[in-house]
Image (cartoon, rainbow, N blue to C red; front, side):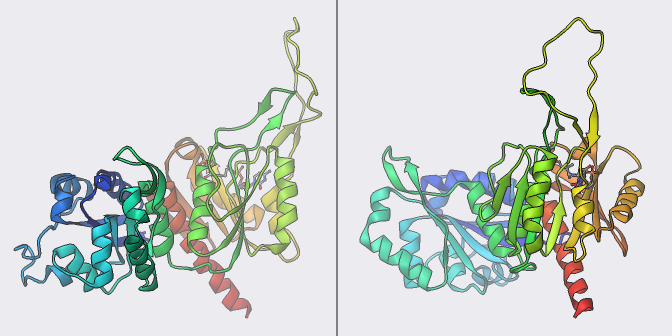
Length: 402
Ligand code: PMT
């Protein structure tokens, strides 16, 4: 299935020391399914080479208005056609001033002036340049002109000083860009998402858990936020930061996850169960650490946990329900059986041994219309495609009802 979330962006580099961060930025954009066309000013080429940027973006780099590779000598117009955005990172104080005044004396500034797509800039400069009233006036004007200003951040600067003016990190720029570009397919929709493992105590210090890292569930939460959803995330014990904009409740056990879901479900349009919930818990966990004895065996009695997804889907007026199934074999068959048994509209199947803990994933989505395979990709890229599919199913269900 082609990736509908693939975006095309021009990344403009201007001449500041933060240009070195553009290498990582390009790599992360590509990882997030964004096709990057790099354009550099002459000053940027003094900080990082076009060859480096070409290798990382996989596309020839443009630096000159009169580049002979553009047959009609219209590089300043041609390059931005069909692009979803221009991102200038780093954007120097000088380049920001040029944008404000509509100056167009090189390829990048001309592209910005002649663009039809949105413009985002990530300022990077010394703190005094940033604080200067001229820069502050210019940045305010840029915002009034509809340009999106990302950052800057405060911290250590290349000049040895500390203060405002550091360019945002690559990850932060990619996140902001992805959210900006994402079609708002779930605008205002309330999504309740579970993620991570559960931890079922045996005694005061031991427990039963699994290797779920939470990466897939958190990626689904980020993708839903990008799509405009209001996200409540119920998370098992993981070491990931909360996705910006999500309302998060952290739990340990399946019983706690169930209670948290019960509290929120009445205000939910879409429920997505990504958590690897323990099917069993220890009956009467010991309050204190179990001491080692000479007994040959130690027996633990396990009792079943509630099926949270099954309970949500079985409510009188259930939200649109999505489950995840991790299987170690017979993936499609077992996942479809689970979909029917739990009566959910969509089941997302992945191979447990390849999905758990990994940074990327390959999934099959199973619904009434059949099976849809998604190629192996970083979990956020996969999550965006899953969310786009959920949005399609959800809106056609709503249309049928109305
Ligand atoms: O966290 P990562 O490291 O990124 O790994 C992601 C993942 C592999 C854990 C994830 O993609 C995934 O597959 N999650 C579901 C794990 C699973 O096998 O679930 P299950 O087959 O036991 O359950 C099927 C569905 O019922 C799931 O939606 C689960 O959340 C839900 N369930 C299960 C048991 C239970 N007691 N209550 C539930 O709600």
